[in-house]
Amino acid sequence: MRYPLALALATALLALAACGTSAGDPAAPASSAAAPEVPDGLVMTAQAACEEADGLYHTLGPGARAEIVKGVRAEAKGDTAAVEAALTELRPLFTSTSATFADVAGKVADPDLKAALTTLSEVAAKEATFTSFAAFESVAALAAPAESVLKGKCAEAGRPLVNLD
Image (cartoon, rainbow, N blue to C red; front, side, top):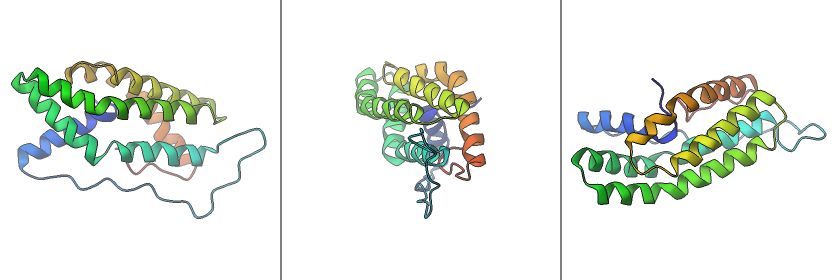
């Protein structure tokens, strides 16, 4: 089962923590030397939208991973105060991620890319309201198809995502 945004990080990090290893930093978004021009009437090309999305997945990297690991471990121990502290730390990140996905979705013409970005915005907004880490599984089914479309559209646009597995 694919997990959206932060839960994927938590799952991977818990596995790595159990093995005593740490994950390397995800690749930073590549900067495009010659981005294609935006056609008349559009605000953002698919390639530029993919650059933004990949940047969001990069942002959901090391700092968020540390908070997620702390929260998942605290939840496993029944430490509700630590769970709330970790969620409180993550909420602004999810809120900002949601806003950025929504902004980018509003600027692209491709209806499939727009729908995928809108769904990911909704998922991140929902994640910002969670009160437990177990709740993240409830959005996995929503995010996986959108992330699949995003990966496909970005590959077609010549800007494959490097920060989304």
